[in-house]
Length: 214
Image 1 (cartoon, one colour):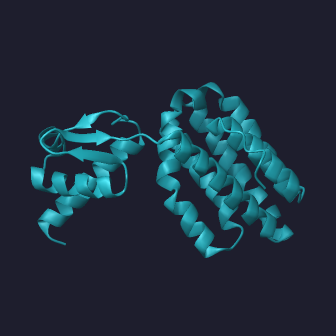
Image 2: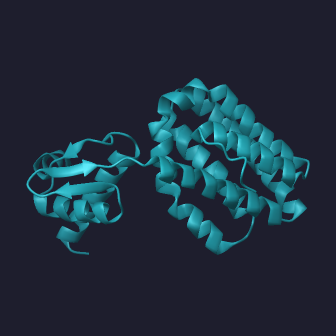
Image 3: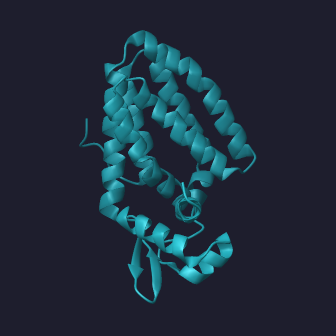
């Protein structure tokens, strides 16, 4: 990898992380010069990074003006909630009972870490733990294509959770209770109950009515 390519990768990762974690909020106009100064690189790798982010749909570049950070539309948000419900519920439904029980045991420790992160006010850590928690539901279905699709949605999930930061902290006790309820359905080998609990959990998190699915 050349020096320019390395700088472009660093710029891409830094700007992308800034968008996903809410540092660069939707509606913000990013300038090449200021980004380059902040990152300690020239404008060339920043320009390459911005074009890559535009291709991914995170920004819109306006020549001679800068790059506008885009939010997620109501339609995309609703579609994401629906996709997650379908993938996670389907994967748990298709898993063997023994694997569901093993997953329940493993996720109990995850919830304890989530509780500690919230108690410490560490929103970033809590969000990463939550993403991993929900990924485990897809993983247990043992479908590599479904897991790949889930991981491709990870950035959108991360973006939304950071945008809901204050809301997440405000309903932290409810979130933990909902996560524990999901584990309970796995432990009792109740995939149908899991689906209904997941539907309620995602509806509350995303503010979407998901009763028409599954």
